[in-house]
Length: 72
Image (cartoon, rainbow, N blue to C red):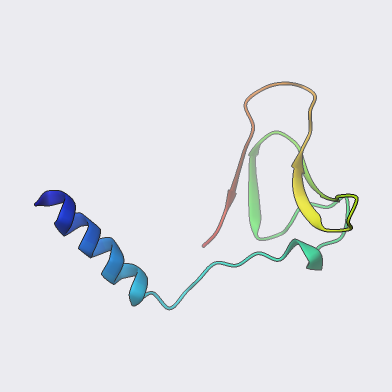
């Protein structure tokens, strides 16, 4: 019963939520970090793949814990 109640709460909350977070990496400059995100630990930058699509990439060195916060 608790699971059903909790599920209904999240469903109703998502249905009536007006603010949706969306991030389009195509609008960011390469080698930069988006302003609407926050680096907690590590080095992140916008890169592009072989098809030209942009994504957020984490530095491979040093190999430590890395974190980034995004969203409202």
